[in-house]
Length: 129
Image (tube, rainbow, N blue to C red; front, side, top):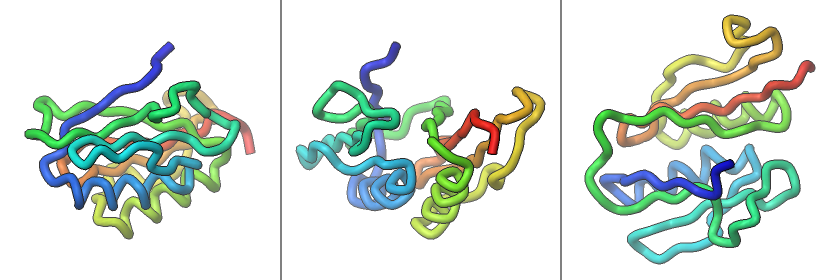
């Protein structure tokens, strides 16, 4: 079980704004802001981490290579859709529009977006509609 993870971002202001917008539909909000490091955590019961600093951190520094892929759990398919729309509106690039991915399993509903540093981020819901 993961407690938290962090990634380097090349432009903290741009990435803070991007992730605040993109992750809001999934229930995330900024939980800690130390300037050079910002933590995001879920503000509701679904997916909430016990870490008060949040389970996802961005840290000022050179982007990681190779670029990792990571997925955020979504409670509903509509949350995946809202994530995709918010991430694109915040400057992300589509890396796979929201929809079913039955190659993984029949109810795998996801969307993929490249963040400002090119990280492949995903929102996924495993529940049937």
